[in-house]
Image (cartoon, rainbow, N blue to C red; front, top):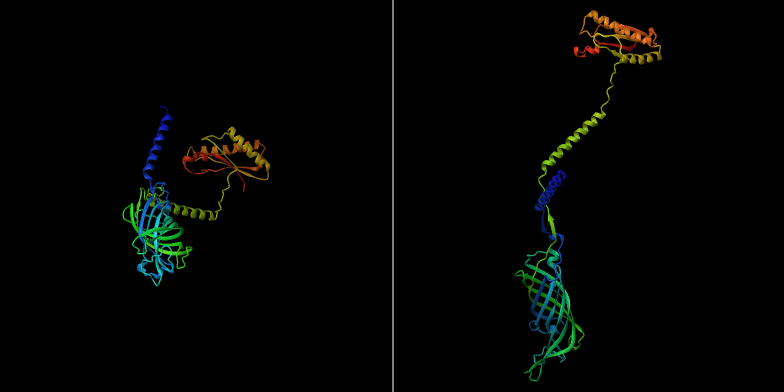
Length: 402
């Protein structure tokens, strides 16, 4: 197998390991704070039945005793919640309204006892109704799938047909029901409080206010609006899915304890600050003036026991001669040196003299005036750094005379 194939396989295994590790570390959960998704249309349906009492509040209705004004009311709905907050329902309503009237209009009941010289009356209303619902608990307190108590406000309307009971004979021994031949428009609003018994079944109390058109008063007119109150016990069965799904979001594992790295970073910051302070102090420190020792114009070095000049030495002296000839007013001192670590004193004295005279003669040969040159010798060691540096002591130095 080629090396490139082996490397590619290795990188693939490492990448797969990293992906698997990330897949184990990251989890996915539903997060209600991100909002709620709308369920499928087939979810969150319910059927609701209601039964209770209704009471009219017109001027004539209130002339009957309160205990004699209660009349039955019932409803049956099919509804759906489109979100945890918004829903709607459609069904059929029934309610009765009791009152009194001076006229024997349809609905008057002359066979019953009179009230203040007026006939008692009772009219039944039945028809389809529709409401839009808003969940107050989910709106104000947020959705909770296991909440026991829920309250929702609703508003809507209904279209009723009215019917009344009449006596078929004067003795009021036989009765029948007649339709008034009219249609009554109703607007209503109310609050239902539900208590979840199970996930699919709930009981509650519905308090409703209804505005009816075409209700009869003492003048037997059919175009007057009346207010009716209803109180009913509700029972609801919820089909299929009753809960709401929240968006699924990734949850990363908690970060490892990074205190050690923070401490190291703080220490590094402190070290950097200290170095910056030292650098600043160094840059602000006054520069010390260095005393530069005057160096010779040139130095010619020799091997042990040698005073003759090499071709390189002559090239150097030719350049030195050019400098000297450029300013003939300057005088120069030539000093011959030899090391005192090797040879005898007599040999070293002779080497110093031969070396300095050879240099002087070469400079004169290059055109330097002899009176510019002062040839001397020095019996000491030139640098005196020990026998390991003795080659530095075998030389002729050329310096500008003071």
